[in-house]
Amino acid sequence: MNSLDTQLRADLEARQQADLYRRRRVLASPQGARVRIDGGLNTSLENQIESPQCCNFSSNDYLGLANHPEVIAAFQAAANIYGVGSGASHLISGHSREHHALEEELAEFTGRQRALLFSTGYMANVGVLNALAGSGDLLLEDRLNHASLLDGGFLCRAQFERYPHGDLSAVQDHLNSGNYRRKFIATDGVFSMDGDVAPLPALAELAETAGAALMVDDAHGFGVLGKHGGGVVEQLGLSAQQVPILMGTLGKAFGTFGAFVAGSDTLIETLIQFGRTYIYTTALPPAIAAATRASLKLVQSEPGRREKLNALIARFRAGAAQLDIPLTTSSTAIQPVMIGDDQRVSELGQILLDQGFWVGAIRPPTVPSGGARLRITLTAGHSDADVDGLLSALHSALRETR
Ligand SMILES: *Cc1c(COP(=O)(O)O)cnc(C)c1O
Picture 1 (cartoon, protein in one colour):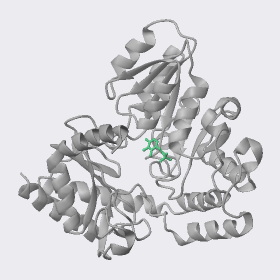
Picture 2 (cartoon, protein in one colour):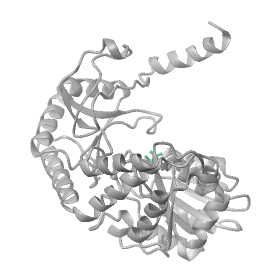
Picture 3 (cartoon, protein in one colour):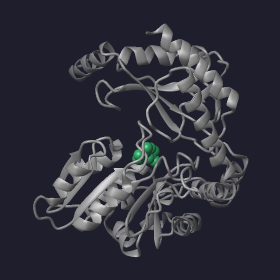
Picture 4 (cartoon, protein in one colour):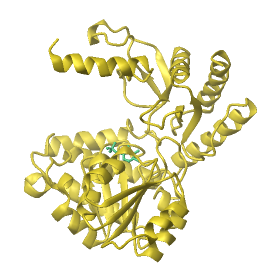
């Protein structure tokens, strides 16, 4: 081995020793409540045994739209018209009618003047923070924010402070300190590993008092929360003035791919002019935008998906309480079971998978040290029996590994 590989190997081995090594499982079916995964790790595709279906509690496809026939049909029809690749960035020649129409529909749906598509949520967050916050500015973020918001903060030239999770008095202290050109608070709406909702009304009030702008990343609320699926801002009744920068992703509840930022005309023009992750990257395939337009129609016209999901969340929580399975206070589709021990989480993940239930076994550094957990996500595609089956498997797995 050359010397770089020798060094890298040491880091990989350390991660393995610490029970923190990550492996990808190969999906052999569409995303959904039931999936087929690899028959063996690190084997070539040809050598894999077709594994039986398992029940999937580890996706963010909350409404079961990733494999919906109308979404697929819209994707196929647009591919026939526009082809596959967009061929260029939005500012060069890649901005198609489908992108444009989706932006207008998202602006209307979110009740904002305009919306701007980004190729991924990661890029939206990094791009927004770097376009808006620079030297002489203050940026405050919750410690448990998604990596993309945190990375946006590390990359930008603003004074960047992370406050303890949900700690409003820490936010207030920071807002009162020093003289800044602009001040920003950026937070997940629904925290991706914990499922809890940020104290947005209080943050909006603090922001307003201090003349700061609040940015909400609603990756896990958009499409799911609120009567019409408008997300956490709809659920909490927050106006465009209270949350001037709203970011949502399309690869989760919408079942497609990409992300958007919604806000004022001035905000969107600023992002088009100064958002480097908007400007210097290839536009999403137009067919993805067309598929997302179909998803948006379903999100709006089929509230039953949200109702079903909420009923399943309630069923899961009630069942867990009966079986003494410790849950957090999360009321969203993200239901973590806190374990703490990294190795036990891996074991639990494997035991559950052997019984046909795939759940996320989440370990540091995705979560803070000591915060290893099973991250169970419910979707509208699950049945009552799926949830009951998971609960009983979970109950015995927790005993087995005690
Ligand atoms: C998934 C996620 C993102 C990133 O979105 P992608 O489109 O997958 O890049 C950003 N923020 C949060 C809170 C997320 O959960």
